Structures are given as structure tokens and as C-alpha cells.
Length: 168
Image (cartoon, rainbow, N blue to C red; front, top):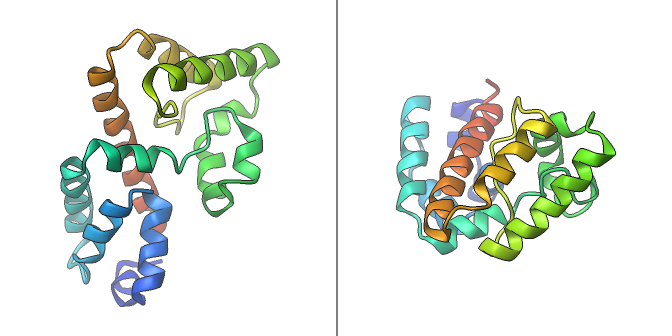
């Protein structure tokens, strides 16, 4: 989709496209108000500003729109609307050993138990081992520190997905 096409899309289609980029309803609502957008740069700048202005609850809502790292089953079912993007983002998991997948599953469980939301990492270009190392390095963080890191990771994911939406 091009920016002019996005600018002219019906609101329902625009909301659906933006939700595929970031699952925070507050972010989507504020993004819709921007349209029509005059440039890609403006779109990316505003997307980030709106994201940083969101609440912790908004961030957690966005996190809930992602499959767990390495959870191929949820990619196939619950996240069908973003399956192509999410599976591409998590392509490093496709070749992972059973041991790495088991450790990712256990790390995901511990992370969610400690922080109350799934582990979020911009997985694009990362191997399963790299993601596992990142997960394990973030487990000792305080909840205050970790939410900030997770929020930044979601911002990276959103930008990549906006770029994909616009065909770049």
C-alpha cells in the first residue's frame, strides 16, 4: 500500500492496517487523527511520538497482539492477521534446536510470570539463540526498567511494520 492509498483508505481499513502495525487501540485512535499524512517521515515521526505518549496499559495492550517468541502454534492460530509479518520477524526461530525452543518456552514463562506480559523483542534479523540470550539477560531487570525496554522494542517493531505496510 502506498501513502496516498493509505491516506484515502476508509477509516475501517486504515484502522485495520494500523492495528496490524501496533495493537494498542489508543495508538491506533490517535494515529487515525493524523490522516491524511503529507509524508512518510511525518508518519514515522508522529507514530513514535504518539507511542511514547501512550500509557503503560496501552503498551501492554500492544504486546498482547504478538505471539510469544518461538511459539509457532500461536503464530498459526491466534495471530493469523499478522502471521506473515510475525513469522518473518521470527524466522530465526524456524531453524532452532529443540533445546533452544524449550529454553525459549521456559524463559517466556518466567518472563510473563515476573512482568505480567509476554517478552517483546524486535526479532527481525535475530537467531533463536540471540533472542534467548536477550530474554535471559532481561529477566533480572526491575519491572520499571523492563517496561521501558519492552516499549522501545515495540516501537522498533511498529516502525518495521509501517515500512512493510508502505511497501519498503
